[in-house]
Image (cartoon, rainbow, N blue to C red; front, side):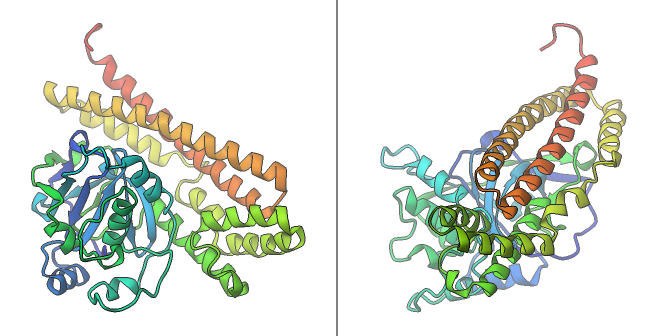
Length: 378
């Protein structure tokens, strides 16, 4: 239930979510003042909020928007006004029956599944039957994940009828109103997106949208497979299993999937956004860090150093994830020789290469910052 459009002029001070306060399973509710869709949702549901985001292992979070279900880093977004967000925390997290692992496994397994554009409208009518399967809107995804963890959030509502308003009113959540801190936009190392205002589509959102276009295209060719998979990842898994049972049909389906990937230009997305022969982004990132650093107070320098240390550790973890993806797809391709799997492997390789460049520039910036502190100052 998130909106898009033209973002307002950037404020000199914005509000970042304090990632250290977050716990896996937290829910972030947001609203976007002045945006018709957000205000309509608030009015119709009688709520102050219009969108719900589920926190995974911080700083990672997951949401369902018109781009589908997307996993992203929550510290890349900011609020113009901290009152446009509310953090919810389950009162049952310390309960022995609460299975956070099941919640996280379910949520992460929904990445790239489509947005429930019809079901979101039906969520206001409790008596109507469900018409979409394998799709999710924002608060539905949250409620379904909690159901997998052993908790129904609202007794009288099934997950597909749970709105942001219902989450805000649920007695199972405590409200945490102070969860952000102000920061100057000059100190943000990346161009920021907004929780409470329209922003350009992120790489993850564009990737999710193109993957869903591929799934929709394949289903038009194979309407009989409409109930076999909802997401891109599920489709590739289905293809791999089909290869073991019916090689002829698998290679036919593989050709259709491969063509859909090429037509969508998914395999070119990473290079289009960050060409391998262009270092403009990385040079700008480094120079901004160097120039801004000279104007900071001692306290701000310590804060920036801690930020780069955390970011360095995170990029290392991301590189590990990307290498695991590459290894898995390379093995799958060597075993199957499917063209669509080869294309997915190429996409994973490009993603790994980009993250390697990001990791390098982050570590270079960290060296710049570390060099300014006295030896032995941890």
